[in-house]
Amino acid sequence: MVKQAVILAGGFGTRLSTVVLDVPKPMAPILNTPFLDYQISLLKSNGITNILILTGYKSEIIEKHFSNCSNIHCIKEPKPLGTLGSILNAYSLLHDEFFVINGDTFFDIDFNILYQFSLDKDAVIALRYTDDISRYGFTKIDKNFKITEFIEKSCLPASTIDGYINGGIYYFKKSIFTSLYKLFKNNLHSIEKELFPYLVKNSKLYGLPIGAAFIDIGIPSDYFKAQDYIPNVLKLKKIPILFVDKDGTLIYDEGYTSGKKIAPILKTRDLLIKYKDKGYSFIIVTNQAGLAKNKFSYQDMIDNVNSIKQYYTQYGISFLDVEFCPYHPNAENVSFRFNSIARKPEPGMILRACEKIRIDLSNSFMLGDSSEADIINLPYLQSIIIGD
Image 1 (cartoon, rainbow, N blue to C red):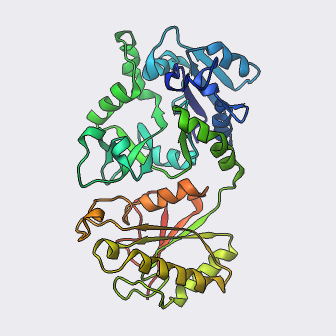
Image 2: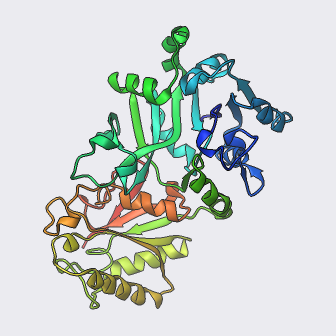
Image 3: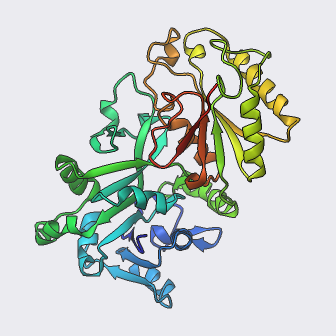
């Protein structure tokens, strides 16, 4: 496991300056505790013990706060160097491999999942799923999770509604910086604008979609939201989940199954009881193309799900969440005619659930009836396919 993390904490925090005074942005208080403390607590809980904080604006505040921490080192940039420049400025202290974290981003990922994926790679971005890319643009990856393109929001395809965005956490091998370090005097500044395009051009940058609670405190509205959001997330214990398909898994699939009448599959019932006894909780994850194709109404779908929930109460089983995807590229209902990565086997619904519930993804599974739709395109989530 990687033991070093580099936190980018040198920015001016201009957007937050109206509500956070006299401290650098990463030291902005969250319920009277500096934001950096929460980030470092997350890192330590993931076994990351060597931490470099790259400082700039009002660096003395950060340095004083961590002056008695032997495993935390602050490195001040001599002048504003940008995200890439500040990393190169700390080159001599970097381990052979390390994580980089934006100093204003809280992303509660399992770092070991990111590490295991990165073993044979030079650079990986932890990607976050969003169901509204109109605010961000998105990161395009191929079937091997290699990043092929960064698409600006002004260039979004009309048929696309959701996608992956930069989650503000990266894995790097130090070797990729060697040649860049030699060019340091040529004023390299930005990870996003200079390093990432260089890596994409040379087919060396990967993106791993990971689900977890996320918030960026860089704007006032999200900073105020973070006051309760971050402490409340960290109070929760991560729990293992059995994600369960609906049609053909929980109930027999009669073709666009909907309405109150259901035919439960007993084999699945027995399997859920077994996993309940192992300490698992459950989330329904279901493609609902029938909505897109006008085969049934939203209320018909809700009635169907409620009947399933009611049936399972007699076995002491409840479902923490129900994730459904109404989108289909050939939808008759034009409001649902989108290419969506929420639609299985793409992982959008799984990742969306992870932002609502603190899930132990490394010990979670997908349960389904189809090797095509229910083997989710995530390298760390195993699938269980039930037979007849």
